[in-house]
Image (cartoon, rainbow, N blue to C red; front, side, top):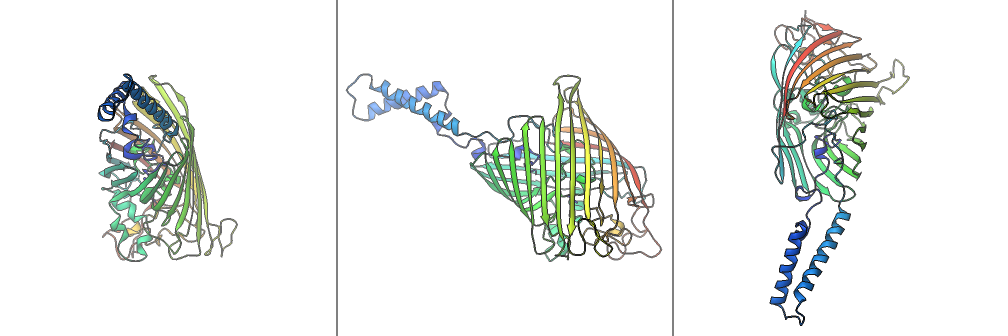
Length: 506
């Protein structure tokens, strides 16, 4: 369901949280105030000499010294006033690279005054123990094919920042450019092929920074959502395959966001967007939402995302609400030790749809309950000065009506074609799923991760691809998701996988 999984300022990425004028967090100051005390004194004396030689001579021999001291005093007062007015950069008081959803890079080798370049590569090999004959993996927004080497994401772009103007561009090539648009049904409403227009963009926005409070950013375009905590880019995460709470909720929004920083520890971010991970609108109403990020210390991060919209294609009477809430705690930190760091995360999600034939609770055969409840928990350990990482975790969801369940690509079915005849999405249809994973990382430098991960996923109904696969013998036949005579997909209630990945971020 995702295309950010901001760079947003949870965004979780702090580099995008606040950018001052000309790349300077305090904006531009008078040139004299940038000088060292010795240089200020020299400049003041030189200024005094110019005054006495270019204007009427003063009657006292020490006039140049008096003028120089006056200029120096003025510069000192102005500098002190500037320091008083300077606001702390949000979330810069501590190192938050330990968070899942944040890149662990502490510096960029591609940084300039007005542009910070970025390069990302996600290449993987997946072994599915169900051995699907068509190599298709079902039910993931990060992993798509088995027993093959693939580039899941290749992105080139970066951040622009100059005189308050800001922007970000990140391309997406590889499997993400095909799989992310297929999970958005909004292009089927209207013309102009929105899925093709945005296919090769994961982030594309521009905006302006205002020096009010601790900073306000106003951005418009495509930006990461961070509903579900994990990042769209696997390099930033503790695990490669996130649990269902993350994988089945938005990775991106298309619209406007306003990042308000009342202090250097708090961000409030309203959204006015097209809809729930959609390039366009599903009906007549836009989606509304807000993110609140609070990081009172370097060891604690509290995040809340909330959303309201009309996101059922062709049913404008059906409303969707959703809340996604996470806490991350670093409970052990011994730099340089063989066991160097440990942290955990807990994420809870709740939401529902109401109106248009469904209700949030209770319900009946004619008006069934349609809701989403889920959680995920992860614990991360770092060893030998963060050279190695080990993550253990998992989660579970229940989603009657299956309105957030990723549509299995049976006979080419997509989110636009809707659930197929082989896997329905009718009102009240039961769907419960759970998973667990263990992830091992080798991180020789801050720009690269070698990762191997084992996953177990299960559901209460057949959902995952079995050995027979989900593709008809002659390839996709008829309209997407339609019935094919004398054929049925091989769906199972569980799957086990091993993923090996090479992740790069410069």
